[in-house]
Image (cartoon, rainbow, N blue to C red; front, side):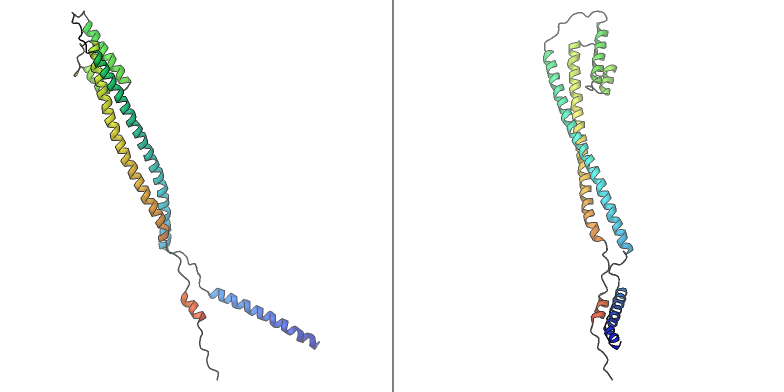
Length: 231
C-alpha cells in the first residue's frame, strides 16, 4: 500500500503543476493591456469623412460621364449645323445663279400682287416649319419688314434662300457656343472627379491608428529585478 501511495505522488504533483501553470497563464492574460483600443471620436469622424468622400467620388463619376455625353452630343450638333449651313449656301448660290437672267417686264394682271404676297407667305411659312427660317424671320416676312411682297416669285425664292443661309449660319454659331459651354462643364466635372478620387485615396490614411501596446508594461514585466539578499 505504501508503494502505491508513493507511486501516486508524482502524478498528483504533475496535476498540481498543470493547474498552477494554467492559473498563471490566465492571470497574465487578464493583466495584459488591450492591444486594440476603442476608436477615438476623432477616428470615427475621419472614417465617416472617408466614406462621404468615397460616395461623393462615385456621384462625381456619374456627373462627369453625363457632362461628357452632353459635350459629345453638342459636338455632333455642331457638325450637323455646319452641314445644314453648307447645304443652304449651295442652294442660295444655285438659286442666285438661276435668277441672274433678267425678267421680262410686263404689265401686271389685276390681283397679281396679291398672288405674289400669298406665295411669299406660304413659302416662308413652309421654310419656318422645316426650321430653315426662325420665328422672328417669319414674323418679319408676314409683317413685310424688310420684305417686298410684290417681287416676282423667282426673286422671292432667291431672297428666301439668302435668309435661310443666314439662319443656318446663326444656328451654327449658336451650336459652337453650346459646344464650348458643354466642354467647359465636362472639364470642370472631370477636374472635380480627379480631386475627389485623390481625396478618397488619402482620406483612409488620415484615420487614427489604434494606440500601441503599453511598452512600459512589457519593460516592467521583463526587467530583471534584484532579489533581496537572504538573511
